[in-house]
Image (cartoon, rainbow, N blue to C red; front, side, top):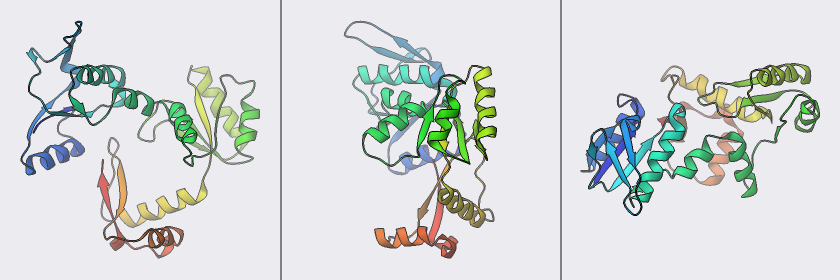
Length: 239
C-alpha cells in the first residue's frame, strides 16, 4: 500500500513510530505537512495538492492533526473523503474529539460512563452548576485544551468559582467536572513506578498496557489492588 502520513513534525516519536511500523510491513510511506496541502474544490472532481503536486495513487491516509491546525486539518481530511481515499480519522470525528463538551455529550448519550460534568455560559449560574457537580474538589477544564493544558484541580467551591470567573473574563468557556480520586491515585502510582524508566514529555501522550494477556477479572483486580501492581505487568505505549 501507498500511505500518506500527515504531520506537522515528522521528527516526533509518535509519527516516526507509525512510519517505521508501516515500512516494516512493506508499505510505501509519504510524510507531508498538512498545512502545506492545498484544496481544489470542483463539482465532481475534488483534488488535493501536496505543495505544487496533485495527490494521486494513495491508498490510505493517517492524519496526525495537532490542536493548532484542527479546522484546516479537518478540511484536508474532508477533501480526502470526497476523493474516496480511506483515512484513519474522519473529519467529523476530529472536530468532535477536539471539543470536550461535545465529546462528553456523545459518550454519555451512547451509555458510556463519564465523569459528571457541567457548564455554564456565564458567572451568574456557575455556582449552581458547581453544586450539582461537587461539594468540594472538582476539575475545571478549558473546552479546547490538549495535553493537560488548561486543566485545573480546585479544592473548594470558592476556589473553583474564582477560576471559572477568571476564564470567563478572558472569553473562555470551561467545564466543571467531578474529581475522581481513584483514577488519580492509580495514575500517580503508575507514574511513580514509571519515572525510573520513562518520561512523557509535553506533546506526547502515553497509554499503560499490560505486557501479558490477562482475563478481564485479573485486570480489574490488579487495578483495584493497584498498590500490588508491579512495573513488570505494564509498559508505556506512546500515541
